[in-house]
Length: 471
Ligand code: SF4
Picture 1: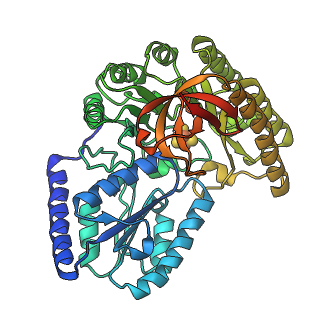
Picture 2: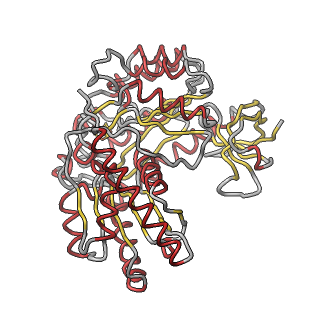
Picture 3: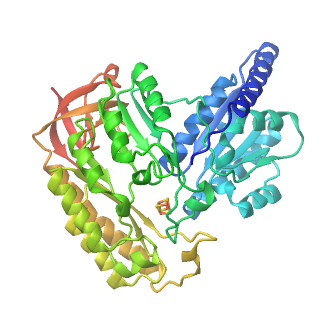
């Protein structure tokens, strides 16, 4: 049964937010400038979504924002624990901030998210980086106003990495960068314990938001001009199992589909073992659900899938893919792949390549396995050398690049409806947006089209994107 953070606790946080607002107003009056906050996010979409809440709370507390950490009065790093290199990056950034803080003694440095939810990491930060003022875990996010207030008024580091029993905090202010599209969390945590993954340890067990809270949030977003909704959770397919509402994820997307003003619905992430026929039917019947599915396979060998504790076989996975392709012709598919999992042989890796060739994904997100302390896979030995693993990783990219290019070529000559995201990241003279199937399309056009739907004729296919002309 999902627990909600009490109204009493939330109003306590609102009181701290008011105190911060007052202090920030005094600061502005005294120094002739406003206090600035800077946030950086590492890791997955869930973390991006958490940062939107952090920024929402900071805005409510009277902070303005800067892209430049050196100019900020408050810096918050929202960290990821999934791969070691993301942790190393954060430690590197903390080292740079140490020098800056020596010049700007009042700067507050906060670090939060999955990485610090691990006690040994928090201990390391306290021991090595004594210039950090605030450390808070994924369960304490909603307490930011109180924790930040304390960090600004107390000596020494303020720490809150308590593991709550999975309560959900509703009605936290959210600051979204793109008002025309929004990620909406439908559930938090994960119960799956894949043997390589740290998420269930740092984000806790699955807990679903009440459907009424989700639908109200979406209606509010629509009122403010949002048309594309992406429903978010570590495993959205098990949505509702812990609620007493008697609804599942398929029911939820039908409810979202019924909201006037919503034009596109996307969702991630789906666990293959929980992808039901009922959901496939709902995807097929709901006209606003995009023709796109991200279904992480992780590996193609049954032996490795078992070691990963993924709870499906390659045959079961492929059967689901066939069914989806049959029911929703032309659906764009993407996946996650881990290369070099402990005990993986070259033969196991060939099975992964075989899956790629059979499914013909539009896109893959591939990673070399990263050992995570405390997970069962961390105790397994490697069969392949680093060199062999890197060689396999490059082969995987080669095979996928060829498939992605071929799939993109099929778009040339078609007219696609694009939701415009603004100037392209790689070429500022072009606009960029996405098709229903989530392909990136670059084309010439006026920036005033940002946030709008336009028709674009596809003229050229690249490996990871398409080019087109506005019509
Ligand atoms: S499903 Fe597996 S990989 Fe995904 S968050 Fe849960 S434990 Fe991690």
